[in-house]
Image (cartoon, rainbow, N blue to C red; front, top):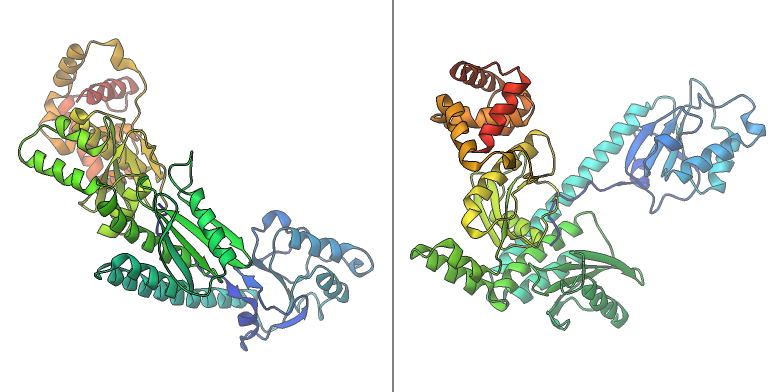
Length: 487
């Protein structure tokens, strides 16, 4: 399943920048600007800007780097060719204080390499041009976010109708101005919306759906293609049930992927419960748990003998049920629990959790149902470390280590004896554990525990006093860490 991030910032059409009267920009060479877009503005006086460009820039220069005899050689041709090779979108040449006019050889080079050349008048600063680019980008982003928000609300409303699947497809086709189709596990088209798509494009879309079908070896969760100028995209729905969403549209806007991803999440939920039998199995498992059946006896109903627990959190934004379901689907599981500002997911051990855009993930070691509580603790600690180190995914370490050299009973007795003075205070124990795992970093421990760094200092000082230990001593830290691993 694809993730549903905020759509990327749309680029700025060059014609929109030229239309700004306050800038007074004038195009001197290159294409007419139709279809040329600017992703950002960058100023450089380097004779060879290639190493410093990412692509899509409006490169601004006052010509400080231009030698006096540049017009009679290949200087400008080499300069422009390097900009084009780096993917630069356009070149802006500022008049004054170095040059009174744009060199003719530069105009000719830009025409030869089809690079738009803009004359920046003396009264227009480069920072003013950059600010205009960002303003236009902000306006475009706001418009795109509004379009995506309206589409999300419309799709959610469609999913609540008596005929939810056809309704979602119709709304999706309308918002993307194209065709949306749902393919079943056998590859047949179950439902579709959006007329006017040529048969060649429909056949190509059906073929693209086969690429993401989960019964293929190492099938991707999504795929894209272009046929006869039509953009195609296919999204695998759910956790290996074989349903696929296909989308064909004549244009591809930055928010289209997000809109299609929302529809994929909704269709995954709508098709999963009804056709796979997983919903009935989960309902049966819940009833048996409530009636007192041990988890180990219930787990076979859910289709796996070993499980991985994943804890996930989004920075600065609490997840909602749709986001939690989307994350679970992306990880290959419908068993998601939304609580305490985060998400807990049970994933069959055969499906390897991967980093997800916008999420911090903590992953436990694979365990049997009897050990799920311990795995839950492992995942929580891994998530705390992921957030503290700003890492997308942290796995619980399961390598053989020192613990295997000491009999478990003796190790546990030693841990109880050593940690006895702080064992009755969960806050002190967890702070000490996190602080040691993060190599004594006050700031990262504070982030992991969501407390102030002074609180961390006070707790660690209290631990040192109660344990009568020098926590600056690496031998002491090692012994404490070994003891904490036994609890």
